[in-house]
Image 1 (cartoon, rainbow, N blue to C red):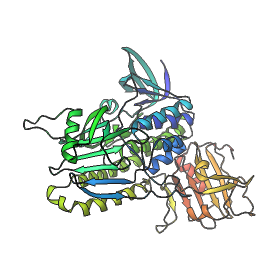
Image 2 (cartoon, rainbow, N blue to C red; image 1 turned 180 degrees about the vertical axis):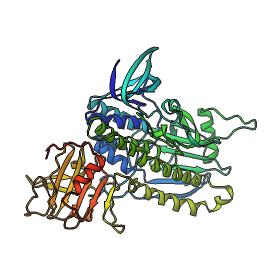
Image 3 (spheres, one colour; image 1 turned 180 degrees about the horizontal axis):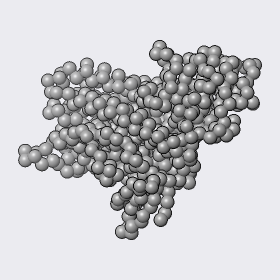
Image 4 (cartoon, helix red, strand yellow; image 1 turned 90 degrees about the vertical axis):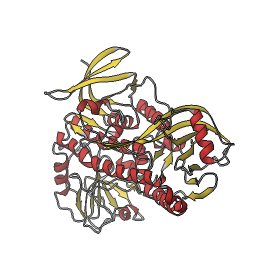
Length: 529
């Protein structure tokens, strides 16, 4: 029977992110996708700053940035008249925030870049391979039945991850409830088409018609196509229209009030139904759910692709440590504990944004004042959309409530120089990889804890001695110290996923060892500076 350490079902952004993360950590995995070819259709269209930081860590961010663009302008129309032009200037790149803006990029492009990165790492996607069934074995692991071109294959995996979307086979086989609601009377046609007659090809265009229906035309970066979204309406008999170019053209003409706008040459057409659902368990023994398999919500707010990528990134390092015998299986329970509250908050926020784009008719005369402020606020909010894990058992916060930085927050980036040869670097580059990162400040001597997943750096001013057992980072202008609000003896431990695991200004001789014993009690005491 073929064996693999992790079987990933689904090759969307969630499954691909997890595969890239596992393979670079030395974990064997298979990625199976029931579709015979990569999917077409833009679908998700936004990557937020935290997701870009993750893709940077995986080595894919440069290609993402090249294929995407910042869309900071939206034109809102109430029928033919322009209601307002919303411009939110892009935030500047800073030392702490190398990716300060959300980027517009079709999901298909994100998937293609992640497949390319996966191939560079030595992995691949098995297209046309369907999960038929699986069982959780009493002696450990999962036995799954796969099918390709009518031929069945049985495979054993230590863990199985369902990243197979809202209609997840894995979730259904587990028998988990997908609690929430489906609004049967709220549907939309989504398409990738060519558009003629637009006088502005740089902005996103949003129309709100007098009958309450909406239309959105969004230009695809570096392409001649547009993503079109048009709300649907059932006819008098309750029948819903099919996804067709004819219906889309009618919606464009009626809702924009402009006959010269023509949609042609559709690449992809689909119907979306409003679903707001999530599971109440992300793990059942050796099986996990991630991405849309665990939660689905409104497309407004651009949460879907980002939440899935962040699910995968949270799970990857934990699976790796457990499979390598570096941590106890209980570490995997923190995946659900950390990510389920994030999904719950995302569902609430996406529903709020959806409601804001479809206000009741009596409110529409005031919509200029309501929507402009709301959308400007949301665009700025998305720039700081970094979910935190402050309540996690993996977050040991010893700095007090008034501190602006806590355990469970994303560790800030900052420039630095390696003291050995003054080579310029940045913290994100030092965090990259499967290890925990320790930053020490001042005179405190970090206790010797041998661990092959640990890197220890002493942040010092030029001319100061380097503590024993550490690598010195020069911080001549105090930028690292400022980013971490560090004091004389501050100690920071950064998790493999870039979150602060521990922060204290008054460490003892055993603070670091105590944290590692609590988080990864199976860690081995081997020296690896």
